[in-house]
Length: 71
Image (cartoon, rainbow, N blue to C red; front, side, top):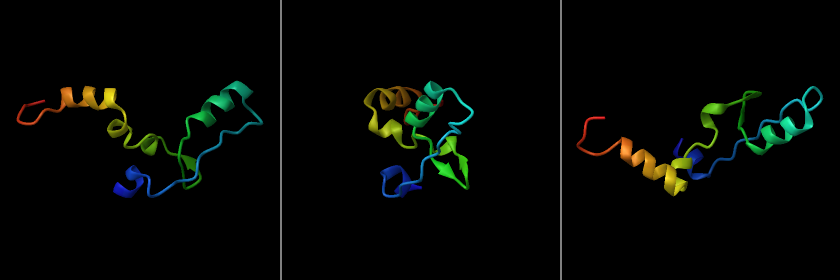
């Protein structure tokens, strides 16, 4: 899991079925870069580790989980 978050492991990306969807929707879903596992899109791994790379998200998280405080 650490290697996946660090970017050492790259998963294939899911592609939506373009033959039955609106082209704008297909473009949006493709831009999300959702990982593919066992032939299916996996939202649990989507943007895994993003909080550590985004200052604002990390700041929001640190306000929720503070050392020595009951959350």
